[in-house]
Image (spheres, rainbow, N blue to C red):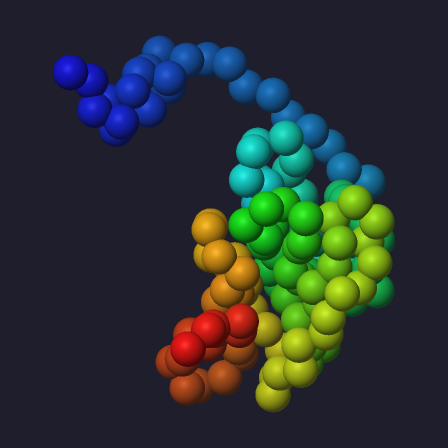
Length: 129
């Protein structure tokens, strides 16, 4: 019986297939796939995301568990949560300082994030008791 890891490794053994996608933005800083693999978002330090334009440098981004929302970490003290299809802001999570990374839980509406501070903390938003 083939393990998941062995199946995954077999996809890349001897593979020479590569494809590159260029953006009109600056240096790409972060990327993430949505859950079903149909969309790839990239964020750049020149204040752009391939899905929709924003007004600040992107530090991190992550698709929500059902690929309807995207969370964007930036130099601003907010995490922007927006609709993937329209870019419409759904929520702005106030933070103490800029956020460096965000990651949605793959099956729940829980967002993990790390701020640019010395606390060594990973914070969670949307946790139910």
